[in-house]
Image 1 (tube, protein in one colour):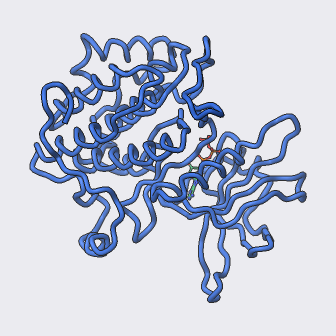
Image 2: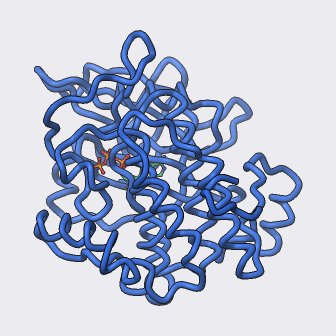
Length: 344
Ligand SMILES: Nc1ncnc2c1ncn2[C@@H]1O[C@H](COP(=O)(O)OP(=O)(O)OP(=O)(O)O)[C@@H](O)[C@H]1O
């Protein structure tokens, strides 16, 4: 994975390529800078495994700051909690160092390009119908797992999901838990919603609740997944490609009513995606989401166009597919019919 960084971004980083990070577990040689995030930098690193083979990982570092909670601690807590799900990178090392003014770090599985970068490489910046829905369905699987562990993501967008490196090009990974939030209290009940909530997230992909300044719940992550799918499926993207927050909010609302067809314009099959939106819009903050219903909607859209949601993605070769068939641990989803009531 490689993203181009400006000179200023390069200068901001306190760890540089060539730095050697020595931990009780291993010695990691810092390589290319992969990304500069809101609170940390991400580098490719390499080390020797126990057989002397060179292996590559991703290193995420966060400068220790007084009077500020470490966001990396939240990231570690989430990656540990979701360790059983194949949509999360595995942590191989982590800790805190005193050198260079003090910093926290995690060494984790290295993944490939983000969904956003992948889409940009395709004609018109979009995926095929089946790839877009297949990827979207996997994003939902990752988010379902996050919700199962009682966190909401709150920043779902194509830049926060990535494709695995070979042989894992059919797996979508959830990245960046910088503004994730635990939605349950110490009694494991859904927290009482706050009266007023400051805007957090990404304007283009955030749910209506975020514009309204109310507490976000599990359904709001799912609303953002629908926007993510449409952004990599509809030529020209989402209809609210404007800067002003109020205009974005207004257009999102209009897309529930008179501008509804604009949101789904030009796609091969929109009926089920309308159902997706209606279902999400029918839920309230504290509601549980019927994820299986949403998987079935996505799978059914694919069967209706004569395909299967588990079909190879556009970047997979036949060779990759043969290997994947041998050892897949992705959920098997089938495109069954959906009844009028919206229940399967
Ligand atoms: N495990 C990984 N393997 C490869 N690249 C990664 C990995 N994790 C993150 N990246 C890259 O680094 C970039 C920044 O990572 P991430 O979004 O997690 O950081 P952040 O500090 O939380 O960013 P943000 O400002 O978006 O909150 C990602 O967009 C991605 O390109």
